[in-house]
Image 1 (cartoon, rainbow, N blue to C red):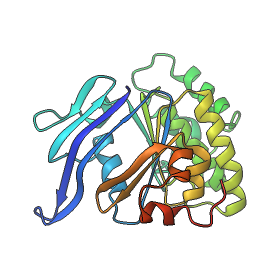
Image 2: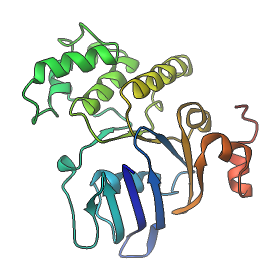
Image 3: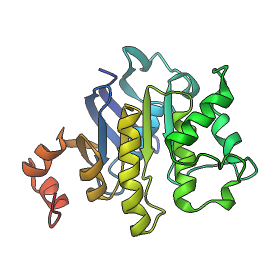
Length: 240
């Protein structure tokens, strides 16, 4: 099992706001897990805990059989082997595409070769000397994906990767992204508010509501057999 979450709890505002309550699930190596739920359900808090951008109150996060977060253990984000693609891509505007991707590859000796390799993987070969403002939104997203893939992470987190794209580009990139993730055999947590994206990309779906897991299972099983009205309504009028 690549990722194990055991009874995670997280509160904010001096304990008055419960962000996550008793969250437990596993993710197998090579699988893509979509996390869906309305705003305030805990999606962002959950991925920030896994990435090491927040500290948990209780529970354990285990990556590749190593505890990276608990009441007594905290592994820094850069040491977790977790890659993250943020919603706004978070590219450095004054860096070239090459330098943006190379930024996270401090531990690889063959940095240039790795950058060229991931540029080819994401379909941006030959664009290494350009700057982010010289790229389309879809190309910027690919650069962000390449930067996350470059250090060869154990786990990749995608935070609403299509939210800034128009519907035509969204549909094209959704297909390309799935192909890239499967070719690289990536283990992925994919956060989205778009149920169709979740259905078309994921192997598994986890539904959050108010910091609680309502249902987790294989994508088709959750779609065909929702276990409550809330989950059923998520898939209403969506053909899969």
